[in-house]
Image (cartoon, rainbow, N blue to C red; front, top):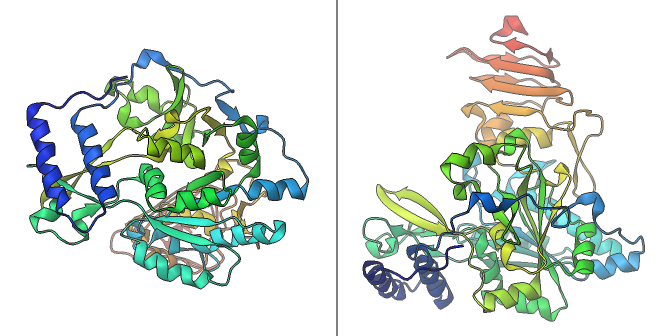
Length: 477
């Protein structure tokens, strides 16, 4: 692996100028300033690691443990309480709902029965805190984009039996590509001048916020980190129990790839360490091989279990040098660069790190309204404890593929176009294009394509049953 190279004189000067400019940015803390300069220094030194393809090995079952090989769990409620007392749940809550046409944090989009992502998460934790008499806290890592809104939103849980803590991930200045100056120094003083540097930042931010020391002082040992929009990321004591017994400092949940997941990062064994391999690190000539389901059979769900003492040790030693993901953007016609890192890439720095090959049910992300259609339909049910469970009446283990046209992209438009969500328990695939409106009690089965002609409104009548059909007008229904 390439180690940090020394900077060329030109780059050293770039970094020095940047340091002086950043020193004057009083919107951010000293920790954020030094973290940012550190990241840019690593980026300039070109320490990006070049993977030697011939050294990649498929991880064994010792390294990526099949779910059914995890240590068995005791039935004793006292043991369960003992495990839960060591646990903290942390949801990555920095994302906005903009891609789905919503303002504010994505976690406040209503998923089902008027309940938001956050409502469901709180319900789940409330249930086992009540059942086992424990106090599992919920941490929300916000970004400066979601912070103010989230503070208002969590007030509604004030009477629940959960300690809810919020903290902010770092705020870094975007870099103007042309001259490597921070965008906020160019007169862009609004939010557009800044960015949150990816969820790899969860570890230093946990430490810098003071939350990490407070949790350790309360005897907490492990944090379960997951995206707030993954409805499948529920607390699983089988995984936690296994990690404690085997002294694993880090566990990444992976699940078998389907054709829908070809871009997801995968776990490999490399020079004796387990590590994450992302598509961005793959040389061009191997990209097709990376996407194949034969060689790389699993992908990262971004459900992560991490030992808190290990986080403290590694952050203090400044040892978490994850691969840098350069993300070029344009703000008001100015080309900028934001440097990010991912939490999953930290796996190689922890002792006895493993993957756990978990059932697909633990990966149910809602990234678009097509996912919302799945989880609001009869394909899933919602339990009193806030769990979204797949309907056993569906025999096909994989979900139907759903493609909705741009008319359905925003949540409000999506909801407006369905009088009620159709029954899709026997659906294989659905593709909808154009100005289509669904009545109530519609059933979709097999392969269905509905394409309204340009400029024509196509209404699917109440109670329609559509099986294996291409529909282009009312006469086809």
